[in-house]
Structure formats: C-alpha cells, structure tokens
Image (tube, rainbow, N blue to C red):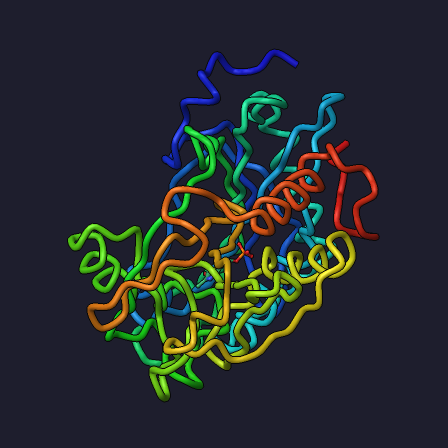
Length: 342
Ligand SMILES: *Cc1c(COP(=O)(O)O)cnc(C)c1O
C-alpha cells in the first residue's frame, strides 16, 4: 500500500479530507445497508433536530499500525455500546454493535493510505456520529437519522515527549448532576467552550469541572476523565459521579492498573480540598491516552502533585502499558480489546 506523502510526526489534530466515509440512513424504523462515499458534506433538512435541539451524539476512537504493519482498532465495541447509551438518553435509534465495528473496519480499509505508519506516533482518528435529521420544527425526536463515520490521520499528542500541564477549577458546569454528562453529546461540548476559554486566557491547559451538585469533588478534566495515585503509590483512584462521561481510556486504565501494575483500584470521590492524599494525577482520554497533571489551581491556591516538569513513575508506567497494548508492542492484550483490520 502506497501511503500518502505526509510528514506524519508533524501532524496536529486538524481536519483532513480523506478518501471515504461511511454513511447509513434510518428511515421508516430501520437502518439501511450503509455505504462508503467520497462526499465530505452531509446534506440535511434545515429543520433537523440535530441543528436546533441538540439531538446528536458522537464517538472518537483510533486505529494504530503495529510494528509488523498490521492495522488494529482499540475496543471499538466499547464505543459502539457507549453510543447506544447516548442514543437511549436522547431518544435516538441505536446503531448495532456488529454494524458499528464493521463500519469502522470499512472506513479504515478504504482510507488505508492515510493510516500513519508505526513509529511516527501518529494514528488514524475515527469520528462516528449519529444525528436527528428530516423535516421538522417541533421539539420532539426526529423521524429520520444519519449514522456516519469519517476519519483522518492525527499527530502524536506529545511532540516533545510527555510533560505535565496545569489546570484551574471552573465555577461553571459542563452538565447538570443528572443531565447529559454521562452521554457523549454535543451540548456538553457547547457548554464547555466558554469555561475552557476562561481557563486558557489565564494560561491553563483547560479547566477542571467539579461535581455540579456540591462543587466539592472533581468530576472531569476538560473533556477527559481524572485519575490520581495515592501517596503510598499503591492505589489508582478515579471519581465516580452521575455526570462523568465514562471514558474508555479510564475503564482500560482501571484494568491495566490492577492486572499489569498490581495496584488497588477504586472509583470513589476525589475531594478538591483533599488533594494532598495523592502523589500523582492525570487526565485520560483517547486523544492523549494520559496527560500528567502538574498542578491544579483552586480558589487562587496551587496544588502541585508529583512535579510541574516531570512525569511521575506510576503515571509513566500506566501510559507505557496502555499505549503499548494499543499499538501492539505489548501482545498479551486483555481478551477482546484489539480488533484487527483485515
Ligand atoms: C470522549 C470523552 C472522554 C474520553 O473518553 P475516551 O473514551 O477515553 O476517549 C472524557 N470526557 C468527556 C467529556 C468526553 O466527551
């Protein structure tokens, strides 16, 4: 396969129009066969519920090239299931898991020339989305839907190696306590743009969202989940809340911490005024796998974890293990985590 002439390791996280995307329509109560298309515009009615009432959700996952040149997806079934949960919450028809995985494979294969080679640090990012469309004006679920997956190569998250970044707590919430925080829906992101901008203006990478009901516990780190390592270095802790988006990276790290690093794990409250119980902390998500947290500023006071310049040893080990599983360097992946594209 002749790859595109791209300086892979210099790529950022930017839109690139690749060759093909998958699209399927839901009409009269069922999904059609689905097809690959070269058209990178979606043609929808002006009254579509996705445009007016936020009836839409999305996913994000990656394809990796292994050392011996195979291409593999990481836990696409988990993305399919999470999207089904988002659909339930927004009264949208679910896209079946088998069809979702098959569509991912079709898209990767059709864009094989765009899949970054091993060793560049770059990956192919897949963006599935499901939107309410069709002629409409009233506030109710759409009569028609589109499910689509497009993809593009994205660069290595850490160009100069992994380094800690700083965050500040936000007075705003990205979602309500029992709202749509658990669903991967655009509305949560629209709500996060302004708090993000405020944090960025103050020189922080992003903001930390506290639990919307009491503002005493950590919920999320921007659009990533939070984890911390206890002072004794023995326990991996990640918050449990009704408004956190269940990150697949987080769920995977819980298993990696236990089965590969021999740590205790817990999903429990992380109080913003008790951060000195932890020696290391990080944000996790598909984009970066792990972003080490140097410092969190809360009400004008800085709390530094391991270091503002160096990555803690447990954080590093977690990152190396999970990334190694994703790109195939570590071959004994847990059952079902790796889906080969062939
Ligand atoms: C997508 C997302 C994450 C990360 O989930 P992954 O499955 O690990 O990529 C975390 N928080 C929010 C709000 C998200 O939308």
